[in-house]
Image 1 (cartoon, rainbow, N blue to C red):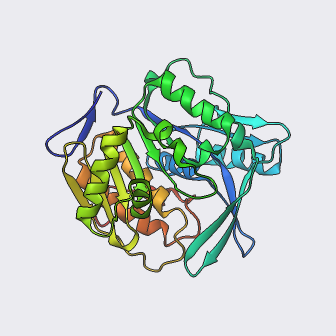
Image 2: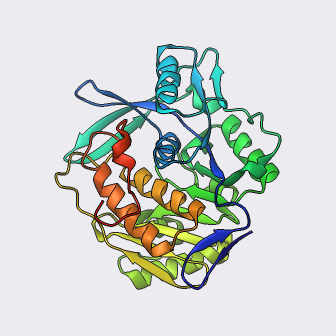
Length: 311
């Protein structure tokens, strides 16, 4: 049972040391300059959380191809478990064509890939996990969507849902199945506006939209990101925490900044840290991600002292 203390510190009954179950796409981002960067929002979160000292269980699928072998090799080298990575015959490993308009990425997420066919994992006891993390992109295929629904039902784990309202890979009819009863929901202010039809130009607007969405879907807590305006953590007791943006120096690209923020938020929740500290750390880490190409880093030092100010 997750509960919120008066100090905005999330604690849990015997969950602080348990790692998250993370489900969804693993893929390669293909950049215009020819670089291929391993990613996918759930995979980025798993990679980052592992870098912070946790042992996430990544549930995904790869093709029986060279790209799939590269995924397994990267996970092995990083020390991540690939026990729940499935191989789908006849389907290629996930890929995204990334184009940059200025510093902003534009994505072409290629269809009918291995992660569209994720089967339920071979897990008998979900008590070893603290949270279930997944995003809305994986819901685009019926096979993986059915797996998500099954794990929600069977695991009864607290859920951290990353909602990406990104046509054509999103349908508003999915919202209830994805988020109803979730412990945390992450989305940006434009997505919140679209889903509630309430303008989200001011913090008061965001609060009203959050209240409307919470009433409709019984979501406990929200992480609302607003680009250069920072983020807002709206908690179940009706209070909220403003998080200022951390400007990268220099800005390289913004790919994976949101995943970085989510990674630190998830890690902080699992470890029971005060929420304000977690939000500020998440902002710093997201800014740090923007100083690099892609969403993750293979340098262990990148993940040191994430929660310490000035690190």
